[in-house]
Amino acid sequence: MPPTAPALTCPCGSALAHTQCCGRYHTGPLHLQAPDAPALMRSRYSAFVLGLTDYLLATWHPSTRPTPLEADAPDLKWLGLDVRRHAQQDADHATVEFVARSKLGGRARRLHEVSRFVREEGRWFYVDGDLR
Image (cartoon, rainbow, N blue to C red; front, side, top):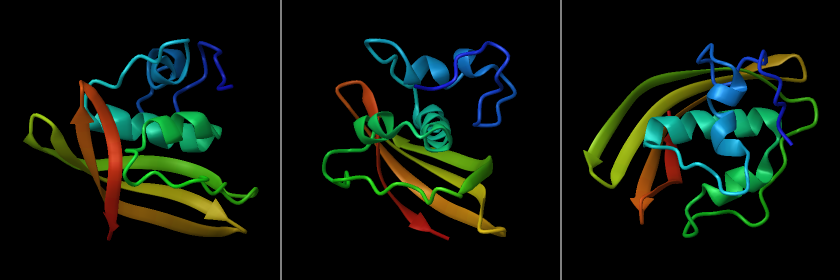
């Protein structure tokens, strides 16, 4: 279960409280849907930080969803997200370029990806991405 304290800053870097940002997509009996690909990208990063595997799988397009989802290394520490740009190809397709920083075993790491998203029946899904 994700932290819900109002003062907890959202891991996505928005400077908002988690409950007012990505937390609203993570919790509740009926998940509030991210309104666009950048919001879904941020909520997925926050889900990685918070270990919300169910949310990650639910927002991964069924055609590319891994089974099972590999767990992060126990000593992996996510350090921040930088959304570089996003582009809307049409009403139902978008890309988001981001850099996620982490540290594993004392070594800094960067994940630079251009992710593809699709909207089906009003709901956005992560499809896949190209590493940069």
